[in-house]
Image (tube, rainbow, N blue to C red; front, side, top):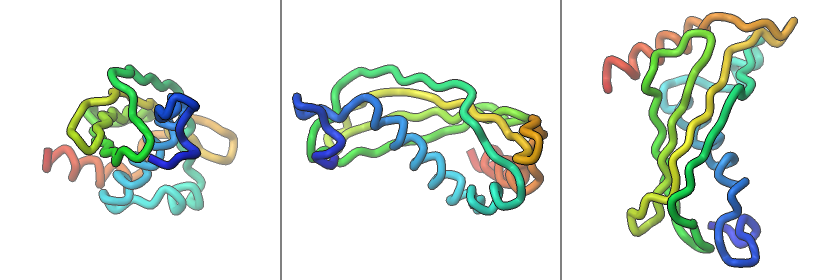
Length: 128
């Protein structure tokens, strides 16, 4: 954990976990062969609809964190990502989720799952 991400008590500030979740989500999509920037360039964006974090223990300065991410339901217009955060001792720090939806950048109207994302998600569910 970087010093600037901690509060005066030496704990990872609660707001920072949302940034970690976003980075984990972007990397998870990349591991499925999806590039979020390319999807945006193609006119599809994914605003956040809902998010939640349930804190169990505090992360501390200089902890090495691991965030596990899982998609448990096949997405349609919405996609929910679940997260589990662990420190380098294997302690479970928090659980959370973000729910996003697919929107056409032009007009900001919800749209069904884009074909490349749909194919990658299908592969993900077939492997898990």
